[in-house]
Every structure is written in C-alpha cells, then in structure tokens.
Amino acid sequence: MLPSSPTTKAVIGAEAAQQLQRFRFNIAFIGANGIHPDYGVTTPDPEEAAIKRLAIDHAVDTFILADHSKFDQASFSQIVGLRANTIITTDIETLNSPYNECRNIVDSLRATTVRQ
Image (cartoon, rainbow, N blue to C red; front, side, top):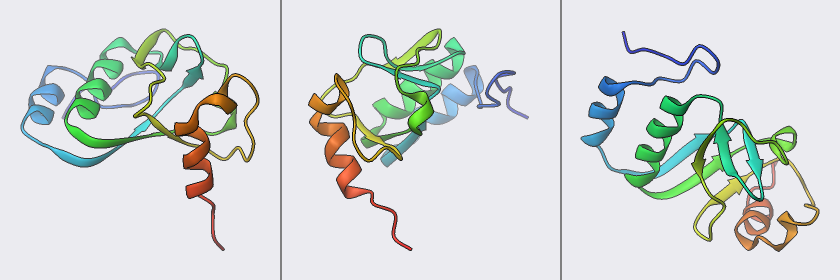
C-alpha cells in the first residue's frame, strides 16, 4: 500500500513518484487546498506538493480544481504558481481582483458551466 498524507489522504512518497515517472497524461486534474495571488496553488503537505508537481510536469494540460473557499487561502507548500497555462476550474461565477485579471481562470469559468 502506498503512503498517504495524514492531512489530505493524497498518495505521496518515493514509490508514488517512481510510478508517476513512467506515465504521460493528456490532462492532469489537481486538487488544491489554497489559491493565492502571491503564493499560487498550495497544499499543506510538501510531499503531496512534489507528487502533484510531477503529475503536472507529465501532463499536456493541467486543471486545478478548487471551490470558492480555497481562494485567498495559502497552505504550507506551493504546488505551482499562478501562470498563464494553469487553468483553474471553480464554482465562482465572477472573480474579484486580483483574480479577475487572470484570463486562464476567467476563461475556464465560462467553459465549465454546470449543465442540468
């Protein structure tokens, strides 16, 4: 059994990293504990952040999944900074400054409308 983070229950550790090294992904869906304009996308566990960075490095496209409660929050370990190729999918319909200037977030909001 692979080790997991006691805080988030995410799979972590050297064995998980070795397994990820063998794969390539079209899309990586990455969960986040915090999204902050200065600190980027974060999680409380450094090993979890390392595994998520590895998955991002092996993916063509990455979607960060975060609900409204994660914005303006920063956890201990940065997964990735807010950059042009990071697409954040969230439940927020309109974002306030400083996020409303991030086209990658706004465009994903328009593209991910929930259909019933």
